[in-house]
Length: 222
Image 1 (cartoon, rainbow, N blue to C red):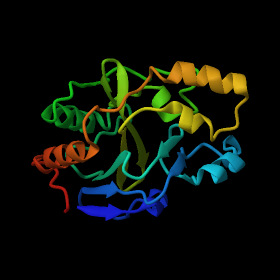
Image 2: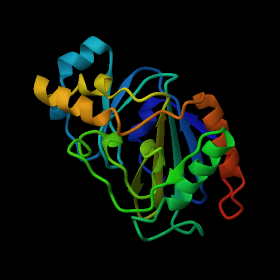
Image 3: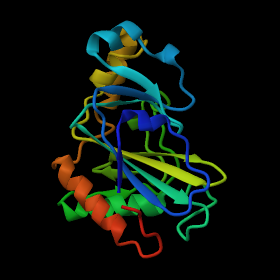
């Protein structure tokens, strides 16, 4: 299993990608990670500087996320196009991985389920990742607990998975260019959209890696 620090969010998918790879991304400082189609114009640079938050962009799509050391679990899974788990259907591509997370959360006592329907968007979903629920993501009591995004190339796909220890959207919203009214409305709407797992992230990480290691069709490099 490979481990990397924050700069790994910007790395390109290897080509060729001969086998599946799992990477646990460990952040060393607070990061505001924008989706590939988002621009820095969304960010209040002064607020980010005051908060000591670095702003970076990932290659995969979706909305912004805020990461803190020890409070965020980010796992990348790199899957070659030649792997039996590969799907050409973008909407189904990481259903298998979502199921892994459901099973792993169950192993640590968290009842979760896979979102099998289409994108459930909200007014703030395009801006904030955990404001919407996409196909293959994982929910508990209707709230998003595992956010996922993907970047696909001719070599394969990078599936990026994120769990927060607790969901506090106000922290993220303070870093974005919004009016006071917009920020208040977004905070009221987003607070009920997502949740943390309610168990230590270290336990979740161990359970997910254990589940991934059991997949016979896709042995993961450690």
